[in-house]
Image (cartoon, rainbow, N blue to C red; front, side, top):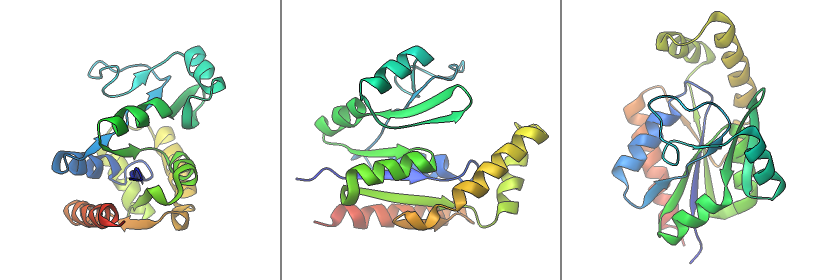
Length: 189
């Protein structure tokens, strides 16, 4: 049987993480692919559950050894990537791997797995709505907000390269729509 994978991508603030959490909570056959990162671990995070926290040197060595399925230097000196070993580990457990990755990383996974992967793009209704959501978080400075908006506009230019686009103008509707899309994909031979 061919292994199937789910790739969920979106600009920051589009609701991707909320949708992925919902999918994982409501579908026992799905399992989250834990990414590796070089960013500092937050107090509430656990190594191996939230991320595999690596030094820049460790990350670069694994990269040179071909251990990453995809990777990006998302911000200067901050690397994120999906380890091939994580996909293998979850596959051996009989799980359908769910990736919550940035847009370019998601497209790289789709390119690698082709029709085995379903690439879903979660889109905000408008850039203005996205800006409002990010402002309401209360975690952004004016500079970091503008950086995220600029990046979001860039990422939105890739939406046509995804298998499916889900507009998140209502979180509950977007969750259910994404659930249906994934169920249909997993039922295909």
